Image (cartoon, rainbow, N blue to C red):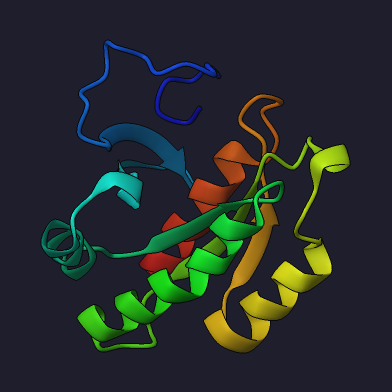
Length: 146
């Protein structure tokens, strides 16, 4: 959604099949470039290189998919190993927040993980309903700048 400025439930063939996208946004009245990498399909060595070069991370899971939520701790551990720092700005994103009937992960459970283990904020988002898409990127940019 933030990359294409529209929601699509199918893959946009106009975008490269790399999982890497770039978007310019205005955050706090300053134009900046946000590079987004969907890590789901990346091999470990490529992923480690992307983590090493990251200034901030959005850890995303679907509120309707418990397995995606369980993976968050593994990704977080890998980020901590590669960056060797607990200071990397990050935010936890609960995606598909409009799917309340299919919800498998409560906001309370996700908030507990965010505050106790990840030590970051949490925001629920929905690309299909355009909920908190821009705010989540503005938040991570603001944390990176601090």
